[in-house]
Image (cartoon, rainbow, N blue to C red; front, side, top):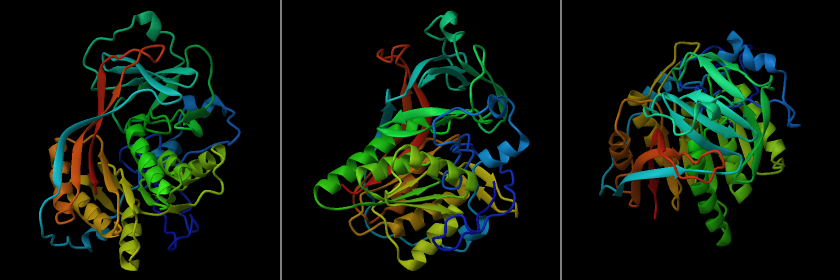
Length: 394
């Protein structure tokens, strides 16, 4: 990934001529390999027409660079000491399992033997899933009808290629979730251009924004590591003023295409192409505040100039700065963590210490997706996807 050196609120005005590869989770650029706060936009045509299947079936080396999430610079994180917090710890609500089922054009059909069968709009897709230790519920005949199958490296950050057993498919196609239209995408990192397990967080944000709107208040939402912008568009459609931060120029491009697809061109969204830590440190110096902050950082990343992001080392500082950016009447701070060897209690207790003296409640646990069968109406097994911790003021 490349590090954007954008001016204060400039939108990708100074970018390096070439994105550099970054080893991190593809999340949100094929996946959270783009760092979510750092990268996330891959948007092709706004017409909804699929592109040539060549790029999808044979990813280029340059695709890896553009799909991996950028990182937060080590030096930036180290220049800002942690605040000394006093007062009582927030209340706690654990464990919580937040479950995503059907939502528009997505549902999890079946899983097992290290794979998952999903439906994205008209397409059935098979992807690797290490947590699916059990046997599939549906027959091999059902799985063999898949329109797209990811093969190759099954690691979270590993590159591979797509096979299209039935017919060649384009790289992108139109999808809709929570009344937001956007592009699905076959990426070289097995991701689909968004993370369906995040639907529960998007719904929570939408509900909080609508509740405030009904009382005459417009919430300000900061989305760090925003990837392709679906969360930002959900918040904006509900009535929020949104600041979307991602270090990937390509990710920002995808997000803006999704904005056009959703007919939200006039929505109050600032698209900021910049390193997430640098951005929030500057916002802290300015005294800027937000009512809701979403952050979805990668586990590890390395930038082109030697910058290093280590989740366990730098996350405390990032959350500490985020607390300083919360408004006096803030609503919540949401953290999602993928592919880490830790219990949700690790980020739960960190969140409680970060919010010491602020009141409210810290809710933590896992995000899961429930199998719903071919027709999307069954209730099958729950597939764990990630950890989360969420501070809520009320």
